[in-house]
Amino acid sequence: MASTLDLIETQEHRLMRSWCRGERSRMKALLARDFQMLVGARESLILDRPSFLEAATERFRCMGYRMDGIHTRQHGRTAFFVARFELEAELDGEDWSGLFLIVDLWRKSRLTRGWSLVERTLSRPEAREQVPQAIRSMQLWR
Image (cartoon, rainbow, N blue to C red; front, side, top):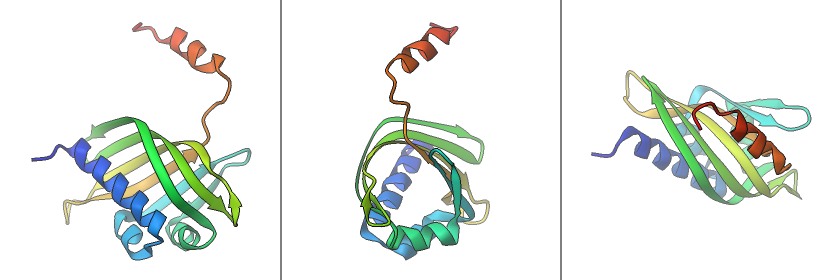
């Protein structure tokens, strides 16, 4: 039997492949009714479920992805999924490809026992090389 963490990673791939194919109904099935996505930029903004589903098939397209640096952690009926994503994407017809950090919060339904995505944060990682080293030096367990 697959572990919860493996199931969450599988759900991530299902969602991303559905986004790449523009399969609105498949994306909708994976997103919780109260889903929202925070797009971190100079001014961070939120897309709710209907807005994201509409945008994902027209104005905010993903044509390809690759993920690595995956970290998944379960907390009861919720699980966090964090990974670096290299996205091939367009925003309003302009190239928006690059490296992103995605943090997703998944929730297990009490009725269906299935997992749905509640919250997604999409942001570009810090580009300055000295930041990871500075943060690493703050880790007390090292």
